Amino acid sequence: MAHKTPGSDMWELALRSHQLWESLAENIHDQGLNPQEVLGWKKTGSLLVGKTVEESALLKRRVKQLSEAGVEAEFLSSHELLLEEPALSVDKESGAALLPNDCQLDAHRTVAFVEEGNRQFVSQGRYAEFYHDPVISLLRSGKNGEVEAVLTSKSTLYCKKAVVIAAGCWTGSLMRDLDIGVDVLVKPRKGHLLVLENFDLIRLNHGLMEAGYVSHQQIMQHSSVSAAGLSNDEEMLSISMTATTDTMGNLVLGSSRQFVGFCTEANASIIDSIWKRAQEFFPKLREMNLAEIGENRKCLMGSQ
Image (cartoon, rainbow, N blue to C red; front, side, top):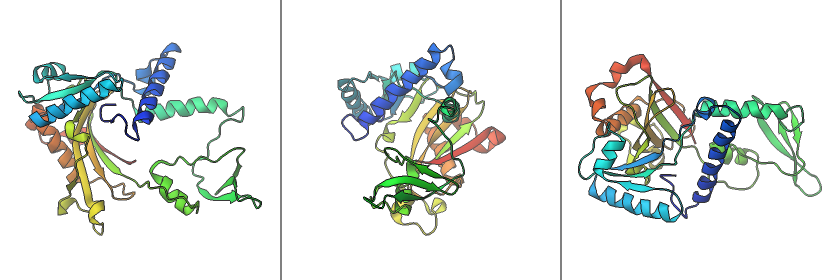
């Protein structure tokens, strides 16, 4: 909840989502399982880190705003921040907003767990999977034009009540392809993460984000990282420091946000920018070159 704003369009959704994830983790624990092993679940808390007087003042206001909205939050002075995260570069102007109840999980493990649970309902006719079977069109009633079924490349799926389109960043283009007649302003936003595997040079106790992550301040890409043929809006790139140590002991650094369609290629210049941004916050990282890490690093990309 650290970068969510009370009263915004996403606030109630994020709050409810947080409650549901915590409920799932508690349910798994009650079954005698370990949520950390099953989901990669960690209640690390989040830190929004400020490096200037202005950012610290902004974070104090954010703590007040979040607290008034019922979310536990507190402001940390530079001394308190260093005690929480010794690996950080901290000076007298630094400060942070701490949200102790924020959590993180491993998306791959979580999806696998949910999928396995869903399959228990196949025999009851309550669940089915249609992988590699894309939607071709919607079938409508000849009487009133209401959607009656979904036609895929291999099947016809009839609905009793409604068809729900939940295709993430593909929703906008899918609805246009299906000629639904509703303009959904959803387009893909690409991101990069840098994962340093079994990285023990620094260990983090929380999920960290720089204060600027909240506003996602946009900067124009240099020509070296520009994708040819894109408009100025599409070339806008935002890079903010995010960092955490996951349940596998990997250091996960981010992050970039960029509108370049469904491009899935890794951009070395963006990865280098993420690394250099992280070095500004973690002095230990300045002692090494990214090329030295070699095979113990990987880049994760995705669209949302």
